[in-house]
Length: 312
Ligand SMILES: Nc1ncnc2c1ncn2[C@@H]1O[C@H](COP(=O)(O)OP(=O)(O)OP(=O)(O)O)[C@@H](O)[C@H]1O
Ligand SMILES: [Mg+2]
Picture 1 (tube, rainbow, N blue to C red):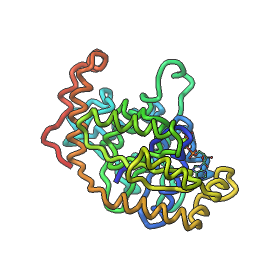
Picture 2 (cartoon, rainbow, N blue to C red):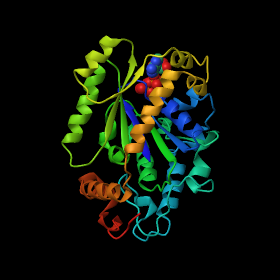
Picture 3 (cartoon, rainbow, N blue to C red):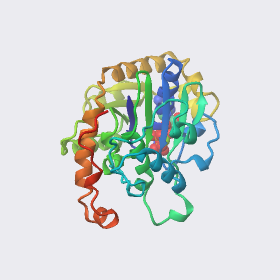
């Protein structure tokens, strides 16, 4: 299962990512967090060091990961990976087996059953030259080349706003939790995301989480705009966590937080993962992407990358 946590800046994405991750890891799931935000906050919430040389978007790491993923797939030259390049016969995959090349070389086990990857921030030499989407393309490759088992969870703390629509990430996840605060600005970002998705033919599941609810006015306000959302109240334990006065796992002592996380678990349980359907959607997007002039100019014709026969 692959889930993403999206929403306006400051809505609570990193906090909720951390809570969901530790909750599932304690329930004996193998969990991988991908910190996919420029600001790289998860390591601080868990109070761990994360060496910058493991950042996925370091150019050397991108090369190594793409060479691994391309494996013996005759259709794919690792130098010609684009964000939508699909796996095919001969490709290697990201798995949560301890010896997996990507897991063992680029993540850090920060708790039992809980691994952290960081996409990474801007790097000095790319300042002014590149946008964060470029950094995210390696995450797109890893997600499209991942094979997960039961009780394995990938969870990505995404960059603020609705930028994931600018890349293939919106269709790489089985479920998106969209964090919304009970105010018009936050809700309008959610509405914009939903209206952009409606313009596409892709099947995307988005579940809103109304966060930092203080009173019944907040709830009634949100009900004017949202249907069927999960609720996390404004919480004093989370407030203490924000000051690093307590640890993430200590927040789980709060009954209301646990009730919320149980609801999250129910939502996750409802999802039927269909990797081959996801692959089909990716291939559809890939075929559109490789027609763009700048992609053709940079890489030539990439239509040969698609292996129509391949199935997960
Ligand atoms: N339910 C809650 N109760 C109390 N405080 C909360 C709650 N949810 C989040 N916060 C606080 O709100 C602030 C922003 O949360 P967080 O950093 O998780 O948001 P974010 O969406 O990841 O922000 P950014 O867009 O900057 O990455 C933090 O101080 C966090 O502790
Ligand atoms: Mg954050």
